Image (cartoon, rainbow over all chains, first blue to last red; front, side, top):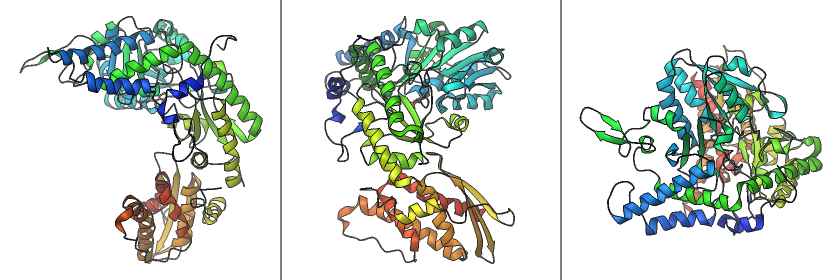
Length: 416
Length: 153
Ligand SMILES: Cc1ncc(COP(=O)(O)O)c(C=O)c1O
């Protein structure tokens, strides 16, 4: 992907757009390496939300008055931007949720309850975030559906050797497009094709994919896709469920209330058209507007360039940490930068991830420590927790250097 | 290293490197509980044998960060041979050592200094530095909370 001569990112210019990098944080220059947790926000996004509140704030789809119309236009404009950004054919297929977690729960609760009976199988993978496991456990407890898991094979990739067996009789395959722990890019199109051939639908958790790679739904070939706005320069409080129109139309509503109905009587209700059928109650309007601005921002950088930057910095990270620390450091996940994103779970000597992240914090280096909401994967890896550094558009080689250098301090304090 | 010496006191690191009373006890007669910090996956297993209201044996298992494991080790050394009443007092004193400081941080200009704990804390005092790192208080109290569970079981 890293074609020589193609433009990558001007990280200095990108950083200048993010106010959090303006000054010291807790007295130290910030090295932010937890964008898989949540990304930082550019001024353009913050300004768009501020502008919404000062220029156009009203509830949406409610009044005939000018302001309400303005608010609705801004919100629906953001929907169109998001739809284009992921290559959806219709804006109405983009459902705004609270976050990816709610989007995945929506699939399980609405599509799952309507389509799955006892004995039906849903195929997941062992590398999933809890958000794509627990909703299915909940449905399994309620409905007696069977959960099957694709395992992990060589070099942090999925083990697809028994895929046909796992797919036999399955109704849905739901899996992550990129692991938030290993960085692994999964073969979405290949799994989708096999699943469809076996008569199953396909959902992807694209939380770590949409912010980092050009997303073309037509190439992915899936039926559902979930992601969160806050990991792609947008605000917290808004996520997206995309699904094909026929599927959404056949699904029962998720939450009931205002905004999602066509008519209500004392005897019952009928649902509104898409997308409103799945958006009960007042939506997070300002956040949706902010997500629209985030999409504009990323489009401005160009997602091809974003991906090239990440592949380059991933190569630099893997090379530099090995050169400096050799066998003292273990980085989980694929060794080939083109097969992964810039998310690195790593072990350093015997230093516990919690202690590691505490020592790094002393240097202003922000990395996450813990199970990253993927406890089954931690078990597969044979660890209780890992430290995790993750890269995004504003990170540069100096950030990687600072992390790599700060590890020496952890060594001084903890090696024995 | 600069800044962290309050947290990683020598004695804390010593208990982490050479944990005291590491192992298991047969249950019964011993009582047992396993504590888990769901945020970070730290685990502490506590085994205690109680005879005539006195903790006669204690063993600690589990895995996790230096603070969770050192705190459990220090706890095991502190409670062995103590009466249940003394252990309860110790536990309260350790926890209040952490939360007293939390309050005084929030309420800086109150002019009220935290009451010194009435119980002799000994080595356990070394964990005082944890209050400056609120995220780690859960690690430091995991052993004590698990002990309480073991005693109830
Ligand atoms: C792969 C993956 N799935 C799901 C989630 C859940 O996202 P959210 O907490 O925004 O719903 C995350 C983020 O932590 C993630 O990385």
